[in-house]
Length: 196
Image 1 (tube, rainbow, N blue to C red):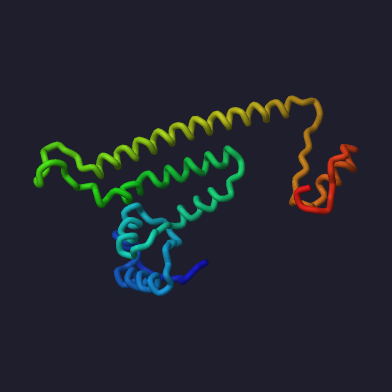
Image 2 (image 1 turned 180 degrees about the vertical axis):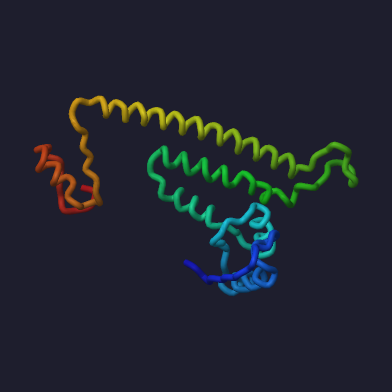
């Protein structure tokens, strides 16, 4: 459900927040009025702009690309499609990963001044998360190559069959089983109800 739509015309986007300060304040106020938990931008935001907007608005912020990826993720049905969407999502999120750990990124260990060469726990956690994300991407890409290879082999085998292959495709309760029975005498269950 869309609570409110705010638009703005600028000669060029604000490099810090994409929208100007006044518009940012307006969006924040409207979000509070409507109890919004999410702001969607109908344009591409840089990782820094999304991070700055989340701080300014106190909301989760997504852009057009992330919304499209989320929709694809909900609708992907095949293994190949699911793998492709997950790879795209992880690739998109990689530069935005810092957003989760910025509150820890400059903490120092030991004495108040911080020892030379030590890293804060935020940086360590960020490095761990990035490594895990790279490893997961590598595994997903390998799995996708395996699925694509399997599909290619199956496609080749279908092409080698000496007779044509036919697929009946249609909405549920559209008459696919009835047509199959009429053409092949297969005696597949056919009933006037969805998913029979």
